Amino acid sequence: MKELYKKWMFELAAVYLVLITFLIGFYYTKPSLTSFVATGDQLNFKDNPNLVLSESGDYTWILGNPGLLKSVKVSGTLENRGSARVYVENKGVSHLIFDSNKLNEKDALDKVTGFMAAEVKNQDKNQNKPAAWSLNIDSLSGKNLGIDLEYKAGTNYDVDDNGIETTKGIIDFTVENTRFNREVDKRNLCTRWRTYSIENKESATVCYGSDKCCNFVGLFSTEENWDEPFYSVYGRYGTTLNNLISAQIVYADYDFSLEQSYTDIKFSEWADLSAAYYTALAKFEDVCLETCALFDFGENSYRLIFEIDNTTLKIDAIGYTLENKIGI
Image (cartoon, rainbow, N blue to C red; front, side):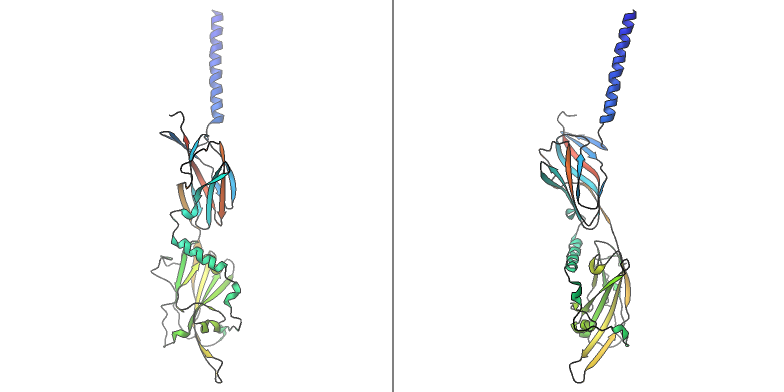
């Protein structure tokens, strides 16, 4: 009887040992995922790397659940400026997962902003000053022109007309509603527009209107009409997050080539409005471009390649689908 009892106790201990070994093994090898869904012949998983990237680089993605990879999608947020792309590499070939330029939230405004920024970037900073001469008209008497500086209403830019936009937006200003006390020949009018960066304590000035008038204040005319809207764009003319946009209307009729030269110079006070920009976040979920249907992806880990240009990208989740070989 004692021998039978000992044999029974030994078998019971062996069962407990196997059970404990299994539980320990499961604890240390359990998959790192936040969700799991089985749909037909595929298994859906999500890994949460919580990557934050402000420059280009790569990341080794180790699948929380290895298997035959059928698709890869990413979710996260992106600062609403610059651009970002994400690729997954397999056997030396890069496959595009994400491209910020193809997000639905991007619209024609981005293209306009990009064009203006490129235009300014390629412009020589000294190009806008005539070599002949420059005159500080603020030192003259005769400030007898009025000015009405406003945010331009009824446009697709800064629709609230409050001078606040994202770094991808545009704030438009106008002096078109200015009324003059006397008849003036508008062919002799020009407007000086000055952008002052509060952060950098630097300013840049451009001139719209009559060539003759703009030359008188030491500038070249960049727009034909004095009452053309002024578009403030983040990065253009040194624009930073917080800025002061100033305008001054000038009337200049003169001729120094005659024996009896003449000058008729009038100008307004400077008028100011603010232009403030902030960085917005664009959210994206389950984006896949070239990775919605994959073949011959059987590795346990992959290299993710990030191309970051003047933005910050956060990857909250990597969703992926595995082939279900045995079924559920």
